[in-house]
Image 1 (cartoon, one colour):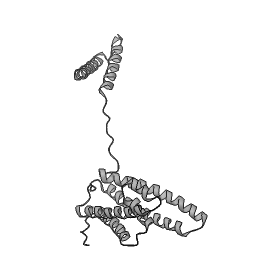
Image 2 (cartoon, helix red, strand yellow; image 1 turned 90 degrees about the vertical axis):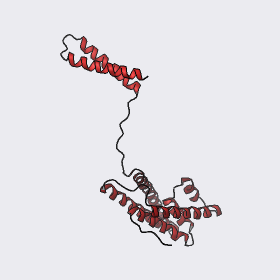
Image 3 (cartoon, rainbow, N blue to C red; image 1 turned 180 degrees about the horizontal axis):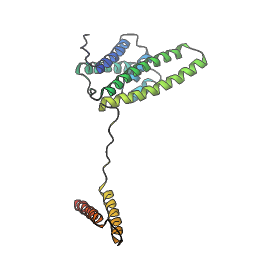
Image 4 (cartoon, one colour; image 1 turned 120 degrees about the horizontal axis):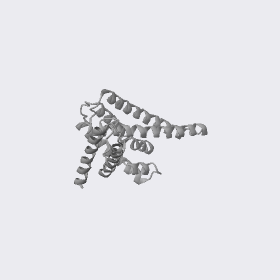
Length: 214
């Protein structure tokens, strides 16, 4: 198979994903190793849970089919380029690449720990390994969430959006402001009468506008 030139870091990461899955497809297709690949790179949570249950003829065949589909999807991404290429600051792009590297390292650690569970009979080792696997899975989930967010939004944090004030809430606040202004104006010793009158009239005009919109 002739592969296209990899022009971006994302294409390189996708290509490495494809290589890992293709290696499994061309091997004896160890079931646990295949499940680890799908849990890492697949997107269907139902299938992830199904594959992690006791294997049978259906799950073995379905696992191979789904991993083969992933290879096809990755080839398309490599050839066409990422749907959401990073466009933000160099700092955020560097963070994104670091997350990709950390993700791949965690996947390798998980594979090593899973293998240790198969070969060790020491209860202490098995207990510590199991705890390490749980921690790695949690970290991997958090990293994937950040990667997915960046690929979708081209940034790690969206700017806070100003909440639109409801019409009813604004009317309520205007009534309160007008009432306070009237109280101040009733005081014969109040000095900022002109300014308060102007502010009161502004509130009244805005209140009239809102009521006309109803």
